[in-house]
Length: 128
View (cartoon, helix red, strand yellow):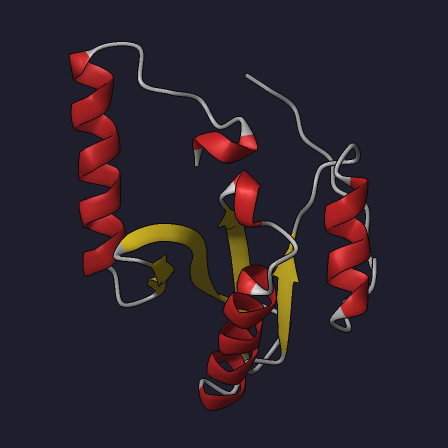
């Protein structure tokens, strides 16, 4: 997660919180974590959340994180993770896969377009 500038725990209390979040994620049937390994080391991760939408019969697959360690980007790991996610979405009968990518991540945008994704919305947020 740190490869994408995600926040690091600042103290032991935050470490416990993050560990609990990861454990809870694994126990939730509406969530999955897909891991790519190389030489017994984790080199990529995709997290998945299945969302029920009020205006759809089928489920939406949402991918909040797709992370490949920086030194192995452009090696095919991200593509294989996404291919697995796409196969899973078909098996789960999802109507679409949605993800977000920061405005500054131009290379990521090219990657997503190269595997068939299109920009279809704007994303708005407000920190509170």
